[in-house]
Every structure is written in C-alpha cells, then in structure tokens.
Image 1 (tube, rainbow, N blue to C red):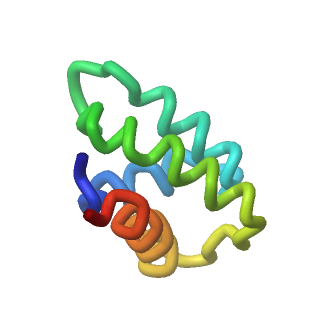
Image 2: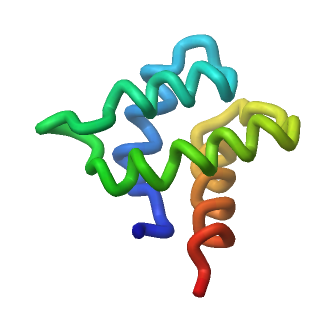
Image 3: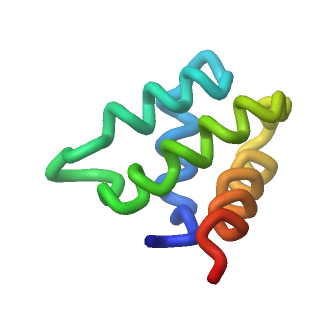
Length: 82
C-alpha cells in the first residue's frame, strides 16, 4: 500500500471537496474508487480509513493546500509503517 499521496491527487481531492470538511472528503475519495482514470485505486483504498480516522479525531480541516497535504500523508505513513 502506498504511504504517500501524490501532490496532484491532493490538489484534485481538495478542489473536488468544495465544502472543505472531512466527511465531504471521504465522499470525494470514495467517488474515485474503481475508476479507470484519475486517482489510483490503491491510493483511494489507503485514504478511506485514514480520512475516517482523521475525522474521528476531530482534526480541523486545513485552510491551505500545503497544510492539507501534510495531514493525509503523515497519517497514512504512520498507519502503513512497517
């Protein structure tokens, strides 16, 4: 499983989640599941539990793209570390 979400995927997910909240992001990520183009399915499958966990912890939704990129990547790296 990947432990890093590509920057292009981060930008796309942030852009598609117009409400800028975690449950909205979860819906956006799930909408990419098993699609022939776009975000790789391995990334989608990795992000779904990570985003759910972030939301459960009550983490504030980041206000900028760089802040946004740090959270899923940091969380996924911890989750999938050996």
